[in-house]
Length: 485
Image (cartoon, rainbow, N blue to C red; front, side, top):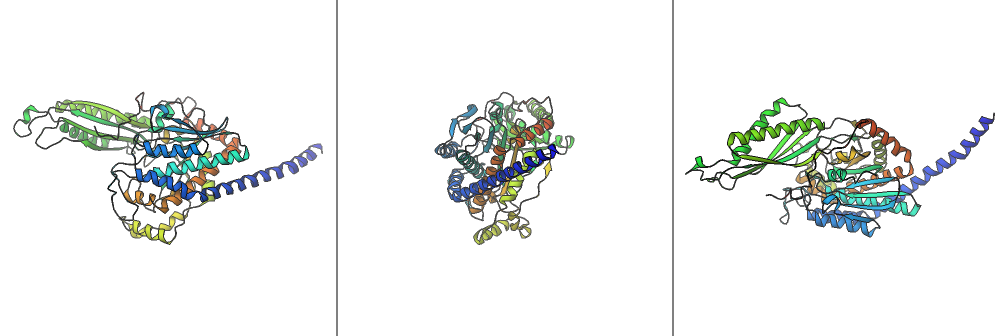
């Protein structure tokens, strides 16, 4: 009887308190969503500045400075030049635990210059373009960090919110150097997002990736009068490429190997003294990437031997596959579902239809799919692309989302992605991302048990004896990898 009475009093006292807490956090979330809506134009203005600049990896000096200044003006402490990267920074507010990190990117892609119009039109002033939407990524993540900071300040919430300004995601592996330098060692959970043509918040993996530039050195000579005195560096590149293409039959089918010849000589009548080829090697598992990359190196060595040239190579980047975290993923998905998809006005619908008409199967594109949030799913074997978020996800519980900043059917790294990201369709997607990250961070500060559950899942997924060792070895950040040598 006594136990029954105790139980009765516990229920009658605790249930109203729990209900009040839920009502309170719901009201707080609603207020934070309204704040982001009110400042949506301001944050898109920041994104548009970065879109206009279109600065490529490790050269994003102005883009990085814009985000730093915005965060500084909103009460964050700024650590500049993180891990020897001039454009890398960390902005922090608060103290103690938990520490919640939000990732922000801001690098553009070379060779995808495009105006914010629904037809192909290059911008004369820049060669690069934000074809992966990182201008939106950085601005929305900064908006979320600032929003969370204001909520913490107003409600006296203990803990630390931290924005990671991570440059050169496109091939430069900026986050890997942050991880290797211990900048995530005290973080309890990490949130991020990425522009897309749909809305989702899955627990999904990616492909591990290792890249390198292979440089061949020959002997210049007159290609017609005395070719026998020369040794063609381009022959070395072409022999290497041929052997790598023969490799494809004998490696796991999930592997992906692609390359571009970045230098092939200066003139047809001169035997090329120098030539360079840039390789990416991918697979769902890091160990297979290492094995495949070593075989590519052997092909390069054999090519140099066979063409009597000299070869050297430089590892440019190496990325882990993303380690999915279902605990955090479900939390993020719940908040994205509450925020919802992207609703086009009439002008945006016309823009979207014109963009869709440029696709090979444009007549079958359902632009209204931007309005829906895809069901939650778990994908533990990576497909598609790679990201340096992978390394982060192996050292701290990490989750992300995607929002429809591009028209349905748009491929990343395309002019269509640049175009939509430079106008209001991009803005609406980034605002939804900022709202979702804000709400998820608030949930984590309010419920430490979720963080602990996510950490237990991380330990189980990576194995008890896991010790982080980057695929980059001890190389320094390739600050000049976007500069042709």
